[in-house]
Length: 246
Ligand code: BGC
Image 1 (cartoon, rainbow, N blue to C red):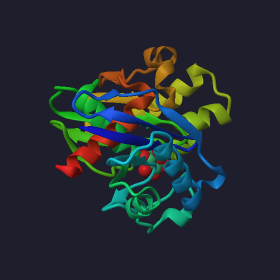
Image 2 (image 1 turned 180 degrees about the vertical axis):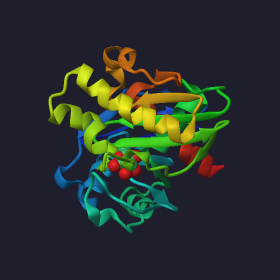
Image 3 (image 1 turned 60 degrees about the horizontal axis):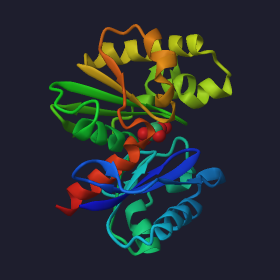
Image 4 (image 1 turned 135 degrees about the horizontal axis):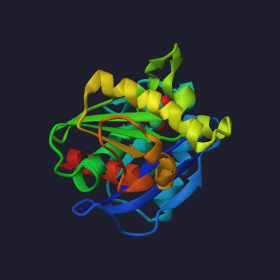
């Protein structure tokens, strides 16, 4: 089944139709800038622009940078607080006329990796970590998702982990890969201690540079880059919508 996957990020909103049987994008993805402030109306209009650009009328899956329960945004860390309490699924459906499923962005990326990518067939506990504007996390046991895990907000030395260890923090503070890897090590060591996972998968915008920092990470748990790199969110959002249409 073909579903349009959309990934709402802090800097860009990306979308592409996905073949949910194979995880392949059917065409090149489209990317539009996230409107400044990421206010609901402007973001929803941008999503609708992407949908129109594909002349799409089928189901849509949207990965969103916040915890989502039954379509409703529960918290907003890197987007406008006006989202909190809003039924994003309904609002996007009204703007596009399409059936819409909304899922947390890291949960979406994890679904793609566990179904088709780096976590395929892996037994036990997998933690997907996305490094971008924030830090997103998704936890799976034997392929089953525990939704809305928010461990980008784990407190380390009294600070939100994502404040120091997101890719945005690396860019903002112009950290060398070595310095950044030190922060990531602290974060992954903490996660390791809390969950004892079998595998970490690293995704987000930074995953394409994995050769620069993965060798510097010293946690005991195996840690691999997302096979879909930054496209995991698009593919996983489409998979979430497929689950809902079944
Ligand atoms: C949000 C998460 C999201 C992550 C990555 C965090 O600030 O709270 O829900 O998955 O950023 O976008």
